[in-house]
Amino acid sequence: QVQLVQSGAEVKNPGASVKVSCKTSGYTFSGYYIHWVRQAPGQGLEWMGWINPNSGGTNYAQKFQGSVTLTRDTSISTFYMELSTLRSDDTAVYYCARRGAVASKFDYWGQGTQVTVSS
Amino acid sequence: DIQMTQSPSSLSASVGDRVTITCRASQSISSYLNWYQQKPGKAPKLLIYAASGLESGVPPRFSGSGSGTDFTLTISSLQPEDFATYYCQQTYNTLGEITFGPGTKVDTK
Image (cartoon, rainbow over all chains, first blue to last red; front, side, top):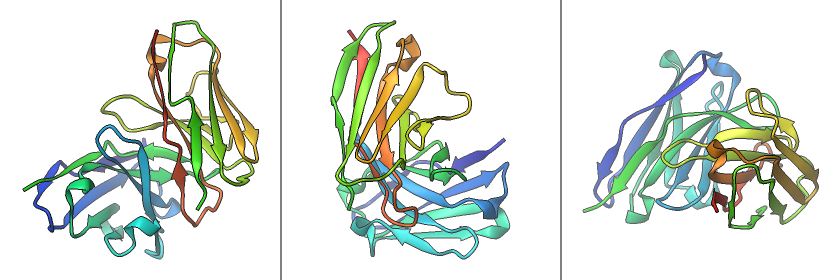
């Protein structure tokens, strides 16, 4: 069965960076783009960007240009989201999601990773 | 960028009620509109794709309609497990920016 399993919760100081992983299984790794979405406490869903598993090509939301980097390691079917120069308003749950074959739907999601930015 | 709005932002309903949520795009997005359900502490769950396609495993009491700029999610008979927040999502530009609506919280009357 398709699974996206994310790394555990992180607590970071302002100005630091965080790297969240998303390990995939149960499907052909190269066949599906992975997107990242975050959700601040009590807020809605915010799209961050996507990565092409084959080429490693990326596209980021304008808001995150220059602060987020999406990468993948094909040898272990794992994707990464790195967010730099953290601020308190980056405190959120971060999700990876698989873009399905039809209609760009996000058909499978990771369980979410809580990132807390606090001094 | 394509902006998404949802109405209402919240609603109170009872089990068995028919519930309708509206989503509007700032420009035409054809049928590139998906709906998700999210419960507290959980990842979103896909319900409807391409405006009206029912995702596998989703009960048929959920349905979607619309195209262009105006879309609707309908729950024909609300069940206890349907109390949640619902988000619409546009994916008009497949390789471009994706946006979600602000969400509609459905709680018990």
